Length: 306
Image (cartoon, rainbow, N blue to C red; front, side, top):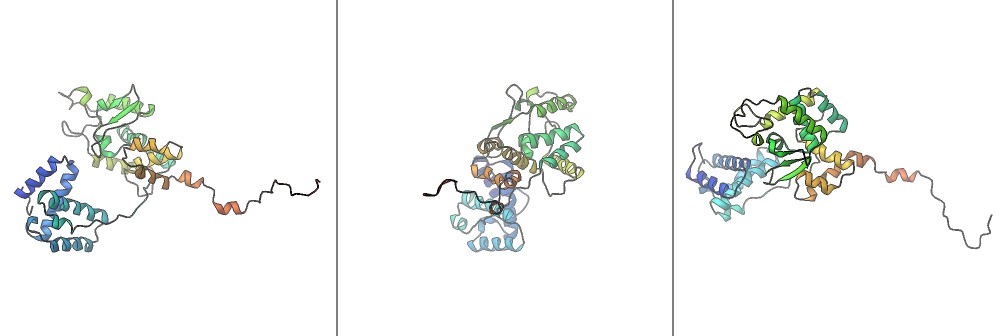
């Protein structure tokens, strides 16, 4: 792992990850993390000692790296030690830091309306509408195929997404209408030999490939700038806004959990902290102090009637 060549140790780690069916993103992240550890050691990680692991973690802290990235790197190194090398003595030296609990950044309904209004290009409006209207992640949007759209049941089937899970989300009439418009003008010159149901809704520049999430992210930021949205929102804010706006309209939180594909209700419950409509509607106890006290309805004993 000290060079770009596939060393026997890296090959063994790749086999271990494939055997456990880790996703492509996780595999790349783990390999990158171990290469960084090897570069720090200036020798192969299989020669590491407990003090090397300690010094590496101190080095990451000194670089000013975020807690999220530090945890990610040590997760990859931990896989190498625990699974591939079976060095449990080194695993005990690894620690993970508690990440700051930040509330998701969401857009108001007015900001969302402006964002979709400035997307005068049909493809961009279609992509952003799927993100906000269905609560899809960027990777889920770009990987949609014809077979995933069920207009009869009015659902979109999301296959093998995060955590290798399937789920269904609603297919609104507006999204369905946009999809039908898009299908009429969608580039089809690379569809030769591909069954209709297996065709990408948003094909990429290369045959058989879909458009990239990086391209989708760029289109989102262009639309956000054009809409005059000053918040530091990201593409994922469409999914956050989807959940928050449903919650503010009174949708059951367990329904939102199913639509988002969350395993734990706690993950979905964080949107209660950013549902500004719900929060602003709560009456402060300070306001109650200024209200006139209600008179008691009980008649005092022995008091003659007026």
